[in-house]
Image (cartoon, rainbow, N blue to C red; front, side, top):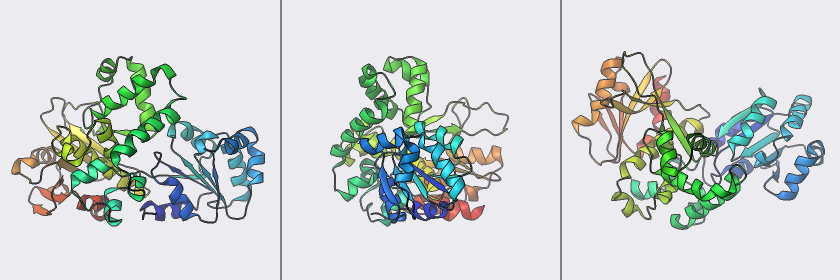
Length: 396
């Protein structure tokens, strides 16, 4: 059991009658809920007999497993009709934290949860180990290339599994179990290619028509498949940030993966050395940092507020904007070990047109030294794992 930042938030959310913990497969959800709620009865709906009982007789299922502490329903998406009966139980008996639901498929869960359990459920998200969690658990002793290549799935570290063994199996089981029921079986090979092509577009504007054409599928199908990948926490989109600067701005989102180890496997990068020589090095470092900023918000129980900014001509761009409402924080991400003066070019322009304060500007790079410059603060990749909590939140 590795120390997870979300544990404290999960206990806080137990004030709700129902707690839902969502996230990708193998991110550590089951381990976390069992350690956080050790007296709850654990039931896995991944088990066919348990799942059949829950689906065929939801009321009898809950009555059979009634106990004084609570119930953990693992992989809850396999019996979404239970929400109606959980709602009745929650309203009738008013027991805080009694029902704990986990799920790795947002596309099956969200509608049933939001409609049936509105106001009764606290929803939190657990992703693979964050930058800070890797460091705190002494799992990030190597270089940044080692960390990016290995990724953050806990089982790789706990069971000492080589990434080249873990990720191909993970990808195969994900496609077979989570996607198999959602798309035509005849499209499975094409879907695998589609996922690989998505990995090749990390950090780029997501042009659905171009992605569809290269895969050999229609644009509506590409849009549907992207939704499946997003809903199962494989990838996510960074939307453009809009402010009235009297400039034409790009409207497409950028595409990123939640775990760079998975992305490296899809890109056939088979070692940290291969990564350091790959033309994907910069894109993967950017994805590593932006995904980690996303995790930092989630690990505090907060909604991620991340964007990028680029004018329509592409002459001016900022990799990431943290929008905290009354204040925005521009962040540039550099994969090099040194920072040149022109590294601040995008931030300088942003601060000029947005009337920003350089003290709220950051560059995150692949080095370690912290630098306080007149144009902004430079921090290394290790220190960036605490940026939201230690810097941004304290300035609110």
